[in-house]
Image (cartoon, rainbow, N blue to C red; front, side, top):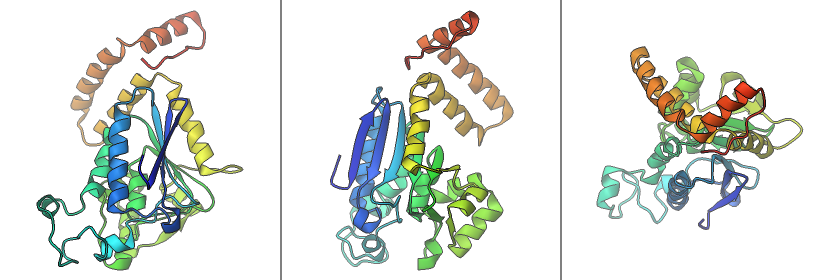
Length: 271
């Protein structure tokens, strides 16, 4: 990958590591762009069946880099800089930042966040766009935008109320409160707290389990849940029928149904 992002692939799992530990992996324009390219690449790599997103140096992501949001970076930011702003950025001021949640969902594969240290601001938004979030005792999560007089971005306004409910979401965005691991787990920001091991180990174990499964069915099953959030019952029944026809044509479906009849454990190949 690039200078600020690492990608490692093993056993069907791709591990994306934000790699600016000296800045607690705060997002620059360049890092966001690198991550966007990596997600789009992984979407088309059949050997990668699950993805883990994490950060280097004991931090997940401390949000957007201070130099970027203050207007001091080389990349101009509308409203806080007098430098010329590219035409495209006039229409999409946050550029790759706001493409990241689309890319995480568009990856169309299970994606899991492994969280140590801070996951705040845009970092929290990235974590919420993942399927599940594994943290350790050091994890600290918060929608801290109001602390600097800003409003939520990077898709947080979409994911947060769906995950924690409207009242808790309102509290988090209005106060900028940062929650420790146990409190974050209690409100739903974290799904699991790793005990006796690191968050990355716990996330990898889960991702490897999915990568070893019937990956086409798993990917399409994810689509069912995401589509169901904003669909009617009739729409979902029709959609489920369509996907059922798709999955029944896979080798893993044939193996799974044969194994059921033969009373044995199926051996899936991900096709």
